[in-house]
Image (cartoon, rainbow over all chains, first blue to last red):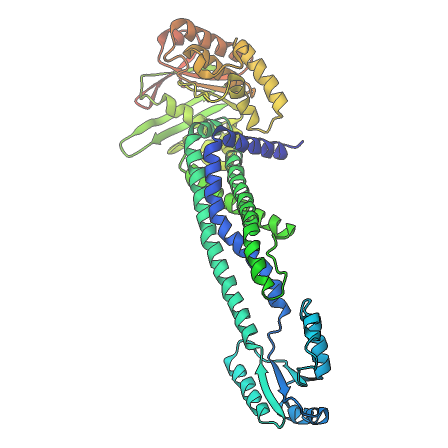
Length: 309
Length: 219
């Protein structure tokens, strides 16, 4: 066993001994840091659950054009060249959806309501066109206005009942998620500073408590690294413990939340549930927690040990 | 082994601790530093251990210039020194064995080996049977013997003892001095500061300091 490994093992043991000496104080500090970490961890969990939903939704503008009931299939199909002309130069993909296909799609996506749909008798759905416009900037208001103008022109075409531009809400959702991500980042940075400050102060008190031991060790030939390491391990342990407590708290909170979320989702024929973070994300967050503790300890040790001669 | 060349040390403009001190201490020598409080004995010892640096002049220990020694090199210099303090400075929250193991632990020695050597060191000062006791359970003289064990456990080339018999009764002081003499007899260079004339009268060289100046025994 080489000296480097032995000294790290000693430092880790010294950190554990410090924890064992005053477990109550250490646990209290873990709880304080855990409270600070729980909020961003909850936000990460929420975003991780919502992201797959938002990614399934296209943010490219999509125009749906519905024919009036009773318009003949030939007349509906005859509209295609005019639509191509309107959309010329827009890299548009135009799809004609016959009313029969629309009904089949509805049955597929209804989530078990196909029996109810079958009771409707005649197909109530009209023939329609779906036009996907590539190359539009999703958040550009000028582009959005151009799409709205195209939709107005389409409404003037013969046999057209209604035209919907159905990308607007997706854009809003995407923008909202962007804002949420930014807010979460700012929150995480702020609370990260809080974590560092708490660890900084905890380690400062430890340095003061162990002042004599540090001074004697230095006189006996201890290097700065030998003296610093136990404090680094203490900070990292504090961060790691707090991260684990925070993640545990978030996981526990998912149960009651899912009861409410499940009821809400069922109203939309969805079985959406908030899931705990995947193992890799958990490991990542624990590593970040330990790293924050380590940074707090390093700052504190470098500041306070420099004052001890 | 230890050489001071025209060494002065000023803590501030008004506080001159050492003034133009030149002296030599040879390998394996036993030397006493004598002088009243404030004479500069502790400052001289601190310079040998690189706790203080000279304001002017040159201090060399084992060929290393203390004034030019980098911060990272200080611990390695101190590993060749055995430091004994007036107030022992034992760690009260750990037993005697752990206290004596500390100089070995800081060097990265295996724990079992450190424990074995610490027991041997405690045995040499007659304290092995109290290895599991805490420092506060011992008398001042016993604590000083444990401090000596801690100083010699690393097999240092030089022992620096700063007023090791202060606050001890005569019998305890004699035991401490006898222990230090035993290590000197084994070839260790010993520098012992004291103002106890009875101890100084042992036939060894006495370096006398007064008001930071060398007044005798520097050759």
